[in-house]
Image (tube, rainbow, N blue to C red; front, side, top):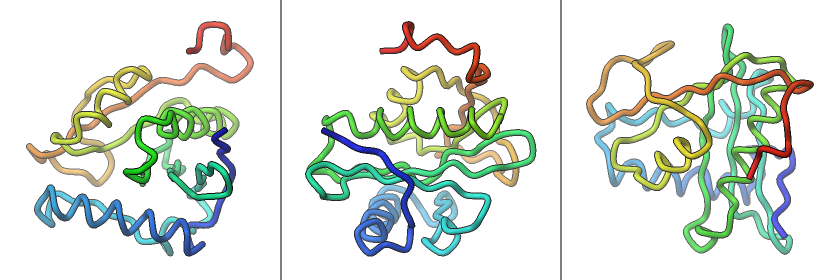
Amino acid sequence: MIRIDPASPLDPDVTRLIFASHALMDELFPAESNHHMMPEELAAPHVHFFAARRDGRTIGCGAVAEKDGYGEIKSVFVDPEARGSGAAQAIMRMLEDHARKLKLPLLRLETGDRLNAARKLYANMGFEERGPYGDYVLDPLSVYMEKRLAPAETRDPATEA
């Protein structure tokens, strides 16, 4: 069973995943197309960080950063050995639920154009492509997405997969 709980990005097991994500992005994209957040940045008060664990082992992570009028999904990553386990979907559901508790009206994210599995996950969860937002500038290697959130009290869990 996969558990998603609040976590510190400074925890060594979590930091290992954050740096594994950075290494993968550095392998796939040029430096100017990467928007890494270091563990210390992910530990900021406006960033809500979560870790996925199975059998006591940290297998994934993700965060929602509170921005002016929206939440931004950051640092979603699943250990390659745990891919296909449902961890990414569980992390994303937790981030959405947490954003609703924070009363954020929408979520936004930036991902790489070559990250097909991630893009498919986000699209399946209701995210739609949009243009750059916040401090992002148009980058042909980036895909920007957003999802409007229904308030927690009107959300119908029976319609979720």
